[in-house]
Image 1 (cartoon, rainbow, N blue to C red):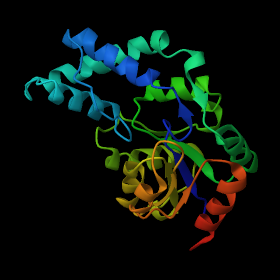
Image 2: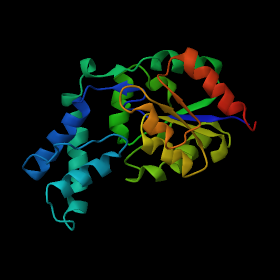
Image 3: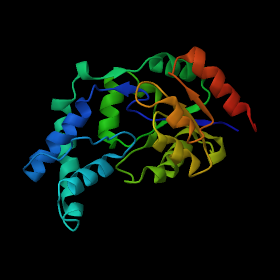
Image 4: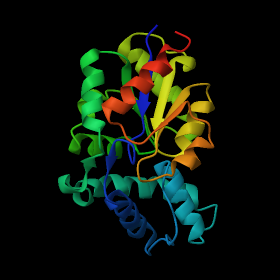
Length: 233
């Protein structure tokens, strides 16, 4: 039976150097009419709806108003993406291009994304980084604000696209934050954490992923993935 590998986007496959979050803040200000209270705030591992909801809460917006503002801010964010997120802002992280090409060339495993980005944000980042062609399906922040609820969306779409069944026990989630690991564990999937520069390896290890790798360098990642997907096959 085939395996499915789902990649997080920001901090795992690509970096925008903070430009994507700047677009979030611009969308927030355009709708709310004042800047968000964002000092010390980290969007890492969160869905876009979660990011905006937390920014609204931090800025003292009444809870009853938040559900009405969220769709408007998300729409503003989508509209601002072509202006705020330019080709020079997005670059693939070390090993990402080579790894996806290698996996796609083998035709095994099936590939997709599991990201907190709304679909339009993920697609723009992946397209500008030259990675979109290898990742035909996925789950996005617009599917559910709780990252832990995204895996079923990705699996259902992958099953339809690849015309095969993917039990959660044959899914690997690859991400750079503790939230990525927890999302995999919530459904009995395996997690491979990418330490990179965004998280210390020790913090990721505490979440007990199947493995922690420093980057997506194929020479490092492929043997780890092969071992993960061989176990229990």
